Image (tube, rainbow, N blue to C red):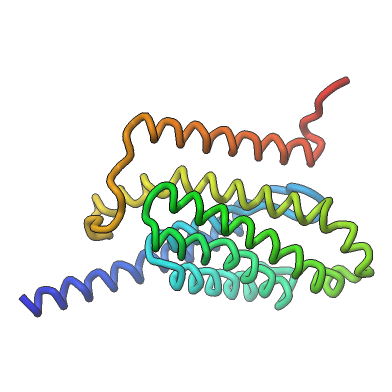
Length: 231
């Protein structure tokens, strides 16, 4: 029995490492393939959705590890912002995914996921305002006063928008992904996670998520000038 338990534990660790490696690859590919211009020189890529999903599966330490690995791979392959860009990537992603994964690890319910994601969005937004104030003048070559004027008009709306898009996409894909991994025996049966919500609760949650996602998409289109209202 002891040998069986050890074998199952080792097998789970192997599957965990494989899944984390796949998440690293998917996060990197998403940066390489999907870049949507949002405002000014900033663009959106969905890598944080993949990383926070890995954090929901395996905890905040896994989210931190995936964040660092993906940023390092970006640095040596496709990055045009050098080490400064890599540092900003790590700060932005970790500020979002680590608190979200930590809270969800403590409270494995839909409410825990939403609270974790909201805390991640808030922390990421605050951290990026501070770090853009400190770092952006260095790699953009502009006076700090110019960056100060961009904080409420460019960086604040961009990071809030990015956070809410990442949060809503995570809520949409997490449960189907977990169910698929469990059916494929890549994850063990759930012991701590709350039971599946009623159909009415799920419909309400998906409707709210869809509304937020549509709102975010419309906001991006307005910022880009693609969508206008009025005469």
